[in-house]
Amino acid sequence: MLDELLIYDKELLIYLNNLGNSQFKTFWLFVTKFIYWVPILVLVFYKIYQKFPKKQARLIIGYGIVILLFSLLIVEVIKIGVERMRPCNDATVAPFLNIIIQPKNYSFFSGHATVSVALTSFLFLMLHNTLPWIKLLVIWPLLFMYSRLYFGVHYPSDILTGIIVGILIGIAFHRICNARIVKLRIY
View 1 (cartoon, rainbow, N blue to C red):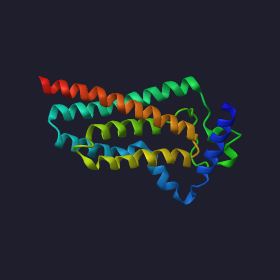
View 2: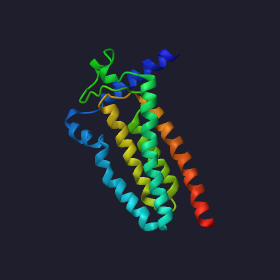
View 3: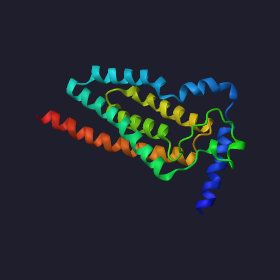
View 4: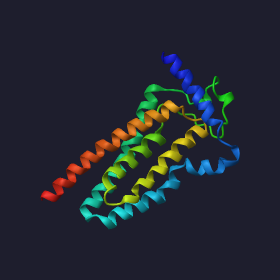
């Protein structure tokens, strides 16, 4: 059964990867780099600082930064432990992919999906009542994740696992941060 799932995973990747058109390569190269999303995150953090009392704002922003680091750490540790070859480097899959970039590290599971979903989930849960436009931030992980399939550097199961882990991290940190904010209100 696991073998069948892995075959389906490869077939789905090949299908999704081949939906992309190489003329959009520059756009996807832009989308896939975290550094280009930093201005949006800085804007979100600035809006948090404007809208919330300073102690709460610093706490939310601080937890957001910790989520980024924590998510990356978890992903890298698991990638090293699992050592799943990226599809762009797998001789059984690569000939069927449009390969534009070819990282040499491991595939399972997607750091792009995990980090973007963890931070977006956390920010949505913390801010959706106060900053209703925060739900637009979901565009970030969606584009970020598809870029990884477009480049053939992750299997769909890598992305799905990253989504699940990211949501769990976002929820956990939301609960922790909320408890700290309640404690701040008491004192």
